[in-house]
Structure formats: C-alpha cells, structure tokens
Length: 95
Image (cartoon, rainbow, N blue to C red; front, side, top):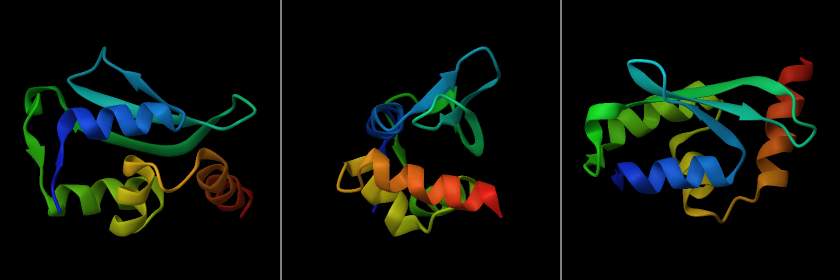
C-alpha cells in the first residue's frame, strides 16, 4: 500500500533516522540509541514532494534498511517502536 512522501519522512525521522538534504536525494541514515551511525540507510527523491511512494520503491527502501516491506510500513506507521528497530539493526551490525 503506497505511502505519502511526507509520511515516510516523518516516520523515519521519528525512529532515529537523520536526513541529509545536501545531496541530490534525501539520504536517511539511522543513528542507534547510543548515537552511533549505523549501516541502515535509505534514499528518497527530493522531487517526490507530497506524492505517493509506490510498493516497489517501498520494497527497495525496506531492503536498504534490512527489513521486509511490511516491517518497513510498521516502522513508518509507528506500530514498531524504536527499541524494536534498534535491536534489529544492532544485532545485524554485530554479525
């Protein structure tokens, strides 16, 4: 199910992703609960604005942050708390 560009951005930033607006795209990098930069990152286009982001792009974004599409939607829509996502990222980083 598509999501609005601003909903994705708001959801990611609420869960600890930091947006880098200085590039040709908006790059979101996850900082864990201890403030360390992780390898979990994803990209959104500046030009998308308030438009909807489709399922295929959401699936690509999910792979970039190490989740499946349904888990990414849970992260964006807030049923997945930041602690739960942090545990996923930290355990993946330790491997």
